[in-house]
Length: 269
Image (cartoon, rainbow, N blue to C red; front, side, top):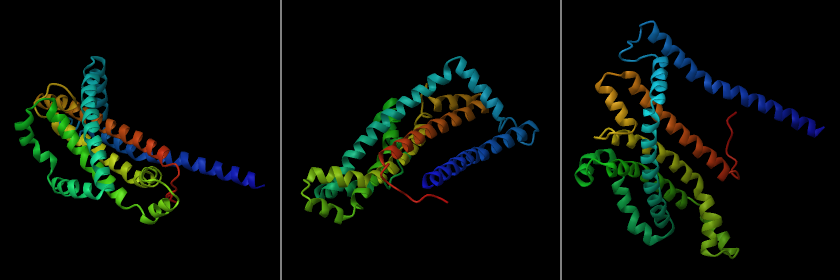
């Protein structure tokens, strides 16, 4: 009898999940439909905001001639390199400052002061230091990714309940064992939050960096289209950035669910 009740409950939950997934798609589809209708009827100026069908047609045209995949590849390469550099540095310094008092004293005050600077405001200075080539764009992405990961990792380590660490020490775990079995699992939720924020900041930085004297990438495609008033290609570039950001966020959320499968958070009713 209990098994039958559980099966019925699982089916109801599955049907509810399907309805919720359809509901999540409803709002974006309605907005796109309204946009298409308003643009086709002339309420929205086609020069200022062409209909989605024209944006899709431009995407298909640029995909067929190979230019859109090439620009996406260039942007993706810069994002991956910048995120790897900024994220790796943030992981090392965040762990150093979070785990060790000397690290906290040496690293954290400087990082806390530096984070008050808007990193996109450093573009003129970075141009003087690095020029207008690839290092500038990768540095901007790395700076955008660094601070969210560092701050969330540092906070995640420092917010671990000290009683858990003491309990682990009482059970005979070494310092390395305490880091492995207590600190890392305890800091992982904050770290994943930092990663998601870092990816968003990295893409934002890339948009700015690719509009500074470059000849490839989605930012270049958008700037070139602006000169010829090709609004549909500018919108296509924004859409491509959004899709890349969404895909990276979906991948991170999947990794988070897998890595934190032990966590049971509050479920919305």
